[in-house]
Amino acid sequence: MTWLNSLSYGSGGWGDELLHGLGVTLGLAIATFPFAIVLSFLIHWAKVSRYTPVRLFGRAYTTVFKSLPEILTLLILYYQSQAIVSWVVETVAPGSHLSISPFVAGMMALAFVISAYGSEVVRAALNAVGKGQFEAAASLGLSPFNAFFKVILPQVWRHAIPGFGNLWVILLKDTSLVSVITLFELTHVATLAINTTRQPFLFFGLIAVIYVLLVTLSTRAQKQIEKRVSRGFIREENGDV
Amino acid sequence: MFELYFGEMSRWNDGLILTAVMSTLSVVIGFFVALPIALARSKSKGILGFLALGYVNIFRGVPLLVLMFLIYYGSGQFSRELRGLGLWWFFRDAYYCGLLALVLNTAAYQAEIIRGSLDTISASVLETNAALNLTPWTSFRRVLLPIAFAKALPPLGNEYILMVKATSLLAIITVFDLMGQARMIFSETFDLRVYYIAAAHYLVLVLLIEWALRRFEARIKWMA
Image (cartoon, rainbow over all chains, first blue to last red; front, side, top):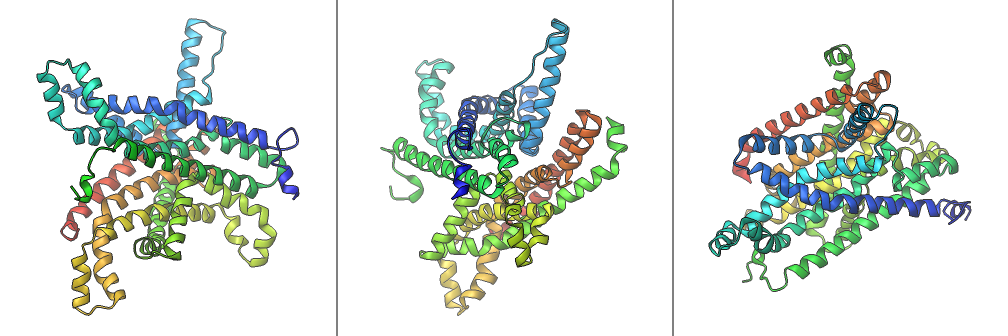
């Protein structure tokens, strides 16, 4: 059982590093998701805006972020934002230095990519709620702001949960890409561990199992939430009204 | 910008071709791997269905990058055993390992897509096949499969586009696809515009595939 030693918790093994990596992976996904959801709504509104340039921007945004490989988006955002920040710092305060953390770059890239898909989830969910709710809210004298937050949004979640649940799983798995820009998350920790232990199958196998468990747990949780939010509703799709 | 493209034209073209070949190969091979899994998921309630579900859940749960690492680097831990089995030539090669990872991944997604469309074929089609005295195999091959394929085409097309993007991960295990060439040229020039040129390639490639798929879908829509 010598291979178990390399997983031990402490200075001799990689157990504590792996746990830390798992924390970063989860932290990145959890930090990114709310941004991605808000961006999804904004991009959806851009796509249905009455101003043509805004509409074009919304369409370009989805086309670009859905067409580019996530890893390329990540690299471009990482290097480009670094270049911009360095330039700004150099102009404002010559001599000083500021660098973009891989965590922030990863958050940006993942939020952009997920929201490109998320805007379509939002569209479908808003369609499912229906225009009538908005009109009814307006006829009761609610401001568009109140109509959205008090009438539409509470109803949107029920329809958006399957779509956003899928995106959460995609996000969780895509955090592994941020290892490429050396963020200390699960996949990167495994790569580091392999450099010293020479046990690639053990470590990659282990993190593969961890990812599968995370995804399975997420799907379970999603099913529970779905069940909870649709209590009191008849499931139309089965036809058993 | 232009010299970065035209000066390195042959490398960009090599990368583009490899990206197109790897993604197409993985989707096509993946489709044939997915068929029995989809059938097991759709028709079998027993052990086969359970195994198929296990396959789908595992390969949809592992990030593709980790799967590639596991196959390419992980196999190194067993190089002696693999040599003994005469399989080392396969696992030594990043191209084969990458392709295997892509196939295993896309087969899981395609299996779910095909299962979905198999399940929506109405019972009357099956009854018609029985009435015509078609054997189960003929019924599957000549009737169910074409209908299921036509129904599944839009999501399968989506999967194809996802695979075009996924091949970019091959670059991390030293394959020179579009992304691999971009990383190579970037490491020589440190010019960020290299990645924008790669992005333009992917954008055009994906838009072209989308356009072609829409035309193909329009042609076989009558069957779905």
